[in-house]
Amino acid sequence: MSASDNVTRLARRIQKLTGLPLWRARELAGQVRVFVKHPVPDATTPAQRRFEAMVAGVLANAFRDRQRDGAVLGVLFATHDGDGLTLHLHPEMANEVVGELLPDWAGARRVFGGVPGARWSLRNGQFVIENAIFPARITLARADGVPLGGAIPLPDEIVMPALQSEVTRANDWARVGSPAVRDLLWSRILRRPTLLNRAAAAHGAANCYAHDVFDLVIEWCCGDSVEALFATLLAHGLADGLVVADAAELYRASATAAIGSRSVVLRRHDHCDHGGSPDAPACWAETVR
Image (tube, rainbow, N blue to C red; front, side, top):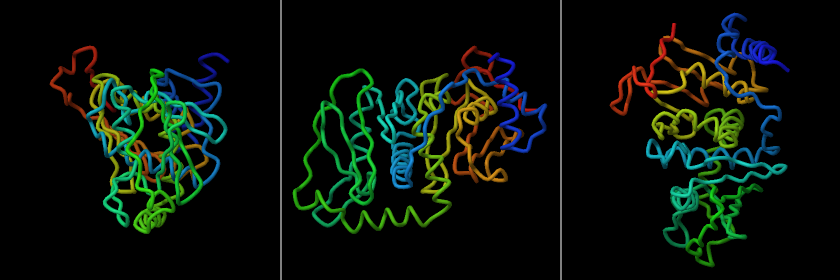
């Protein structure tokens, strides 16, 4: 399939998801630089999507804008095996990723932080994190192939089952906001780290955070325009299957885009946050007309 055919096909998808005129959708489609032959598979169960969404939310708030080499969530790339997901971590961020995801134990009856219900085992230098509340797991590995070290063992009396405080947090997650859409989109973000990392390509960091369980926000200043990243995420299936009225919105005047009833928000600043000049090659600002 030619590049022109790809642009036309993507333009029609963007038009369907956003309601934009076809000519405008073609402008967006023309900014997508990479087309995939094999789409990234979704997690197949609600439990797996929820677990992956929780992981994305915890990591977004953990790192904010202090990533290394553009690894926005500490992840350089992801691999998939059926419903399984392996996150390949930036070597300098790997230990902190593990520490942020595992619970912070404060005695046998209380737990703070981390992903509710997360339990770990170390297998062949990789962390396998399973959830003690519902059936789901992910695997963590260093991207450079170096084995991950062991974590501090949990006290025997609280390894299993999940504590009531964790169950309460998990139930709150499931009740608030638009859980099905949020879980699907945040899981898809976690499964597409190389696309997310484009927001941090110019400076090696982007501001990424979650407002509790409501939205995941990605902010950056230089490199891709908001339209380019928005179109790229749509091209790679982030909004597929959503109700069209809520699938994707583009606010050109404020360089902001929203996907899935604002479950994911993209925002590009109109100035360089790192002291660079808008005229510098890595710090150009595209006017949104």
